Image 1 (cartoon, rainbow, N blue to C red):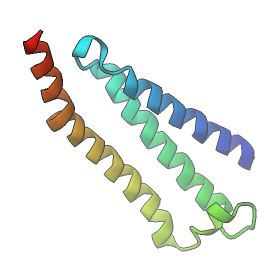
Image 2 (image 1 turned 90 degrees about the vertical axis):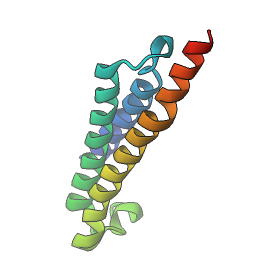
Image 3 (image 1 turned 120 degrees about the vertical axis):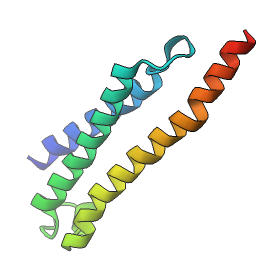
Image 4 (image 1 turned 90 degrees about the horizontal axis):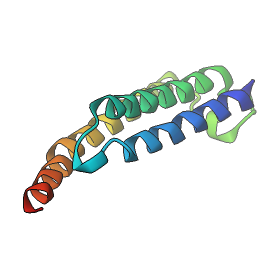
Length: 106
């Protein structure tokens, strides 16, 4: 079961990266693809949180054993939300203005 959850988390993260890189076709934001990239990031964080709930302290994984307190487990979700927020702010205030500037120069 652990390996299945690990594989699912890896697939979700790869989907996140692919969706994020393809969310800007023709120097514009593809909003649905961009939303799905965030959704897959949140699902990846949720999957890691689930694995920490199920397997921390069992010796199955030294990575998951690190999350042996409720605070450390909660930090998985905090990190996921923070990463999503920072990425969104970067896109909104850096990437999109640069795309508009480059499009205006063309």
